[in-house]
Image (tube, rainbow, N blue to C red):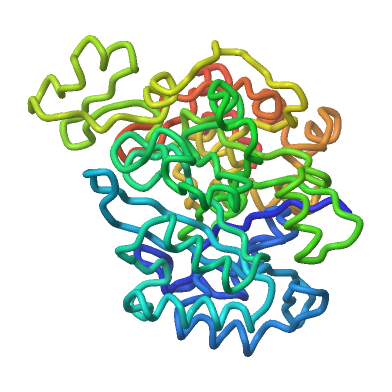
Length: 409
């Protein structure tokens, strides 16, 4: 059973999320995208868990489905802000839980640490070590995944808030950590350069804050399970049996790939940052150091190194971004939606278009986009890097862009 999973998401009860981010829209746009398994996100929030308990039914062990049969895994992200070894630490963790009963126990524990009702991603002043030990006493089936591991502010090995290794962060509890989330600004080849990460399964999820198709499933993990159950999912993560790889955006598309200052309009490559000694040339304050620079700091292998047994992955941008770049319109405009929806009517969902539809089929619907889609499938679309909270931008050649005179629909 082949599965495209996106297990790090949020509900409308997390900060800075769409007010319409409910189960109905999550299911609707997951089907449009071609995602076949979602996390619930935010299970510790009292209002969201009430909806989950009302609208989801456990059909298989640990797999909860809507009335129309779409599957969800119980998930939550938490933020830990604390001091360790004389330094402030800020780390985000994704939690997966096997049952609603275990979710209730997790929530009871989190309540002892602080409030859970103000944000779907609550903040606690406890260490990764303490929280992991407590959660594992509740159930060994709880999965703990360091979220967007490389991002500067809340990545576990990020430049500003992290550690140099998962072992430093989790101490003796690292034995319970089997995976990490690569995040938008890194991909498997970047992680392969750090030998200490070989033991961890590389997962990719969207960390969506809205349900739109350029957000949901923009990063995903590919699984092939005999049967979709929670136990089989966790086994795939922990042993890589049934784990087939990931779908990634180009890491340059991520908001923290290169270094810079958004307010100053300064973006620098790692080489330029080293030359500037990490200081912004405009405001003379320290730069926000991005993921590529941080990987260079920790890497003990050259670029291009591929470890034995490494899984395959796709590097591509969402279809809406491609249409937007080719047509010169924002992703949310009527023009982009019109092209997008016409392609869906023929090919069913976005991942069918991005991954499987051949040139001849694509040409019958939209020859303008065919070459771009195929280049995207092969990871050949160049992207101007994102930095300090600014997304990267796809570079589409002028000859490939659609003008008003050449538009067919």
